[in-house]
Amino acid sequence: MILVTGAAGFIGRHLVAALNSSPLYVPSYAIDIAPLASVPCKGSVTDITDDAAMAALVPELQGRVTACVHLAAVASPPIAAKDPATAWATNVHGTHNVLQLCHRIGCKRVVFFSSAHVYGISPRYFPTDENHPLALLDTYTTTKIMGEQLCDQFYRYHGLSYAVLRLWNAYGPGQNKDYFIGAKLRQAGEGKLTLRNGSVTKDWVSVHDVVRATIAALSSGYVGPLNVGTGIETSLETIVTRLSEHFGIPVELENVANDGPTRMRCDWSRIQRTLGWEPTVSFADGLAELIGEERKGAA
Image 1 (cartoon, rainbow, N blue to C red):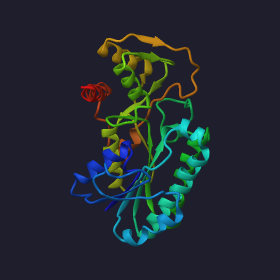
Image 2 (cartoon, rainbow, N blue to C red):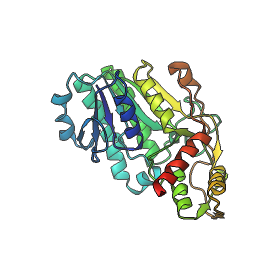
Image 3 (tube, rainbow, N blue to C red):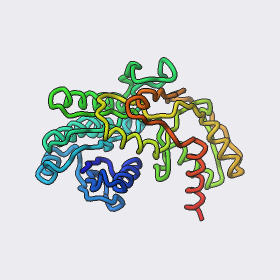
Image 4 (cartoon, helix red, strand yellow):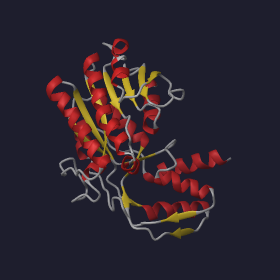
């Protein structure tokens, strides 16, 4: 059985659906702090920062869980900056509780979700590989780096095998509309498109490819960090221009200072060598899927 934390989140919902469609991973068990009605597997609404609640899961899961995917987190740098106490509690203490639970129930493998933000606002070189120095930049990146270090600690002291997936800019159906592409699709639906910092580039990776990478990591014995991206930079201006052309809406430029990464490009050669994974969804196809979802929802 696979334990999934954060199963009701964007990536979690896609992952659980994929796991439950494979005879290798049925059934799955979910832990989340949000309602699990939309997640098609047995689960528990459990706060991973609650020591007693996590300990109470041990009898039910003892000897039944073979691997864990740990997604539950404060997963946004701005949110972490606004509420650092919750970010520290969830991303560090909560991760420790998840690893402790896995150790106590006899789980053998953990896939931990980290972020390309650990390389800093603007990495020193491109494409950026896993050997790039890590940057204790802000609350979010610091807590993610500490989560990675906790995974390594449990491996060294308890033999709990792990892989860290350093995720680049994931996107896809069902993502929160506060993220860039969803926000711009929402604007397009309202008949208005704005753009600031259009020269900023990101490495956009489809949630479908992220799920494939996660499942590959579950069945692998590789220990350490792995980048999950495409190696292709796409500017914010390119995305908004495509939406403008598709919806027939002009773009209004905003003069706002950039406070985030200015350029991102992933080197995913390690995950290709170790897991045989490579991205399969082009950004054009991924964006077309989201446009279709937006039009369907508006119908």
